[in-house]
Image 1 (cartoon, rainbow, N blue to C red):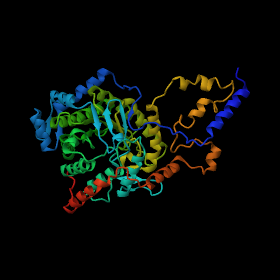
Image 2: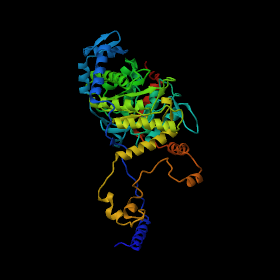
Image 3: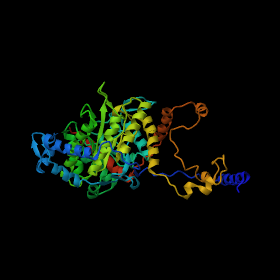
Image 4: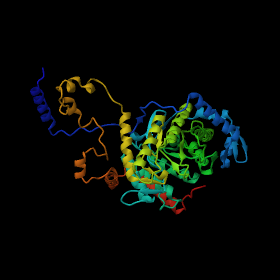
Length: 516
């Protein structure tokens, strides 16, 4: 029989062993290649989802979609679609064949091999809030985005492994538009080794970005076109319009084997029907149209199905996010994506103007809708405010805390002999004892639990003695420490000179204005 004195003696021996000079073991969890551990949730029956899919095909066949780019209309016409003016009517046979040729798994090449991604149903990729014209933080306030903000936001997204790809970031408005793509591409390539983003703002800019990425990565034309080394986001103009730069982007990216993420941005009650079923059906039709165009350009071109559907506030007309309707729309989109078998993109986000409780609630509600829907890529998962008008440094940090916890859940839990701990924990503790000093606890206390980056678990007294600082204030300390480190994780000195000479030459020649 184990006595209390025996237990105390063993505990002292364990503490003596643990007080040596060996370095503390570090918690190791892979946040880079995640798989969604949650069972998908349905909002509609299988019959209802099939009816939505058939309705979307009927929209494209009978109602058509406005396509503003003549080259895109010609591609549809050559495939057998009916074209009347700028209206294109695509038969379901053409759409169905395009769905069949679209890849179900996409291997994406980042700047470093351990950053490579696979996009397919079941994988899980997070992306920071993106495309905002403004940046904000507690020290410098809200401001138009600038080059410094772009680089600092890159530093933040590079630092956190759970943000596995570079987002469209924040617009560096102090860089002229005809030169901006040079700045953003060089910044992404040198400051980060993650999968980069390229705006589809006209063929000249796109092709120059492809050339810069290809040469800096040191790959041939053939290797560059064989796998996506960059991606873009394509938004349709709902309802039922595909504009010139977006259609051209689909053509350019597909033709060069680079990935497009198709995302109709539909707001219930504004640019889409007020119901979840109606809005998602319209979004589905628009996504199918864009997917079809890429496959007509190049069968097998990497394409990611997407949707970003929420509702408006009917009192003001302003976009709302993290609502029950937003959650339901994500679930419905997931059902349709699984019907197609394609990797797909959804989004979280917040309409709050500051990083407050509303912002946290909306982002988490939207995030869990995406997770339960089985989204492959979750955009705007951290840092997004004002419905996309600004990105917040503090919010990126506080949102990443939640994403890290989700990533921990992706790692799963073990229940073997060591985890149960019958001999190393349970048998060592007498009734009404404690487990602080058991063999199992001593072996695992440094690594068992997630270690927060900004949350504070201290009691009220200790928290008060430390200055009673809230999470926002603590998040400021976190991002300031990150941006103070000027390590450029994608820097390749051998190829940097060539990249900068190309940019200097093209800048002297006048750059490349965006096309509209």
